[in-house]
Amino acid sequence: MNFNLKFAVLCFVLNLMALTTAFAQKQTDKSEKQINNRFAFLDSRGLHAIDLAVGSATLIDSDYSNSELDLSFRLGYKYHITSHLNINLTYNKYNVVIKDLYNEGYMSFDVNLEYLITPFNKFSPYIFVGGGYNASNYYNTTATKAQAGLGIEYMVAYQVGLKLFGEYNYMFTDELDGLIQGSSDDSLLRIGLGLNIYFGGQKKKEAIRKKMKTVINSNLIYP
Image (cartoon, rainbow, N blue to C red; front, side, top):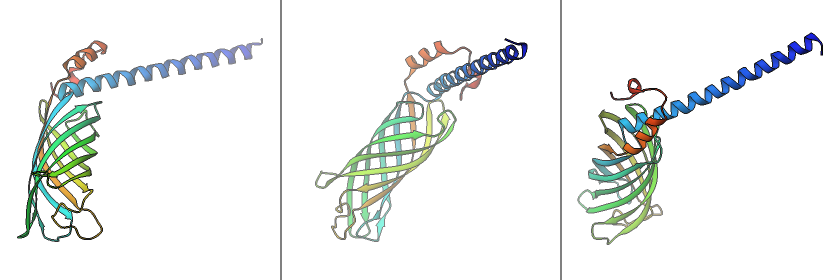
């Protein structure tokens, strides 16, 4: 083997070793970043959350054109599968009001998948989609439904997030306004302001802490 060939082989081996080392370092850095981010999420938010909100609800597609806004309330629970994704259950109470004609109380039991876009920051937009069961106060009228919405959350304090959201609800019934007429089902818009009160995740946080190579106190959302 002549000198030029030996030199070429040596250069190839050295370059391959450098690329392998760089790739391994990149993967290590990526894994460490994911661990640090998960720790920061659990430390500033948490694995679970209580969802409290108040707002307004109104029909946006019904057999009447004079639907009015009325108060709505929400109580729910969230479980974070990952830092970005949670599944949540909510109980919603609201009235459907048609001026001078109709005023009926309703409730809905909803299940949603919710995606936080920037969960490691104080401010995070989010989107959600799901389905539910809608019923009048005494279950005289019931129907299934589908819903989707978006919102923003801002962490105003340790494990307390202030949120603003809008939600579109499509009812698989035309009876929500008390009148069956036309070919389309009724739909409802809910807008709300509320709090996410986070808790839990201590065991997971301690397990993650053991994996961390460096102290990340300076990188946390909250000191």
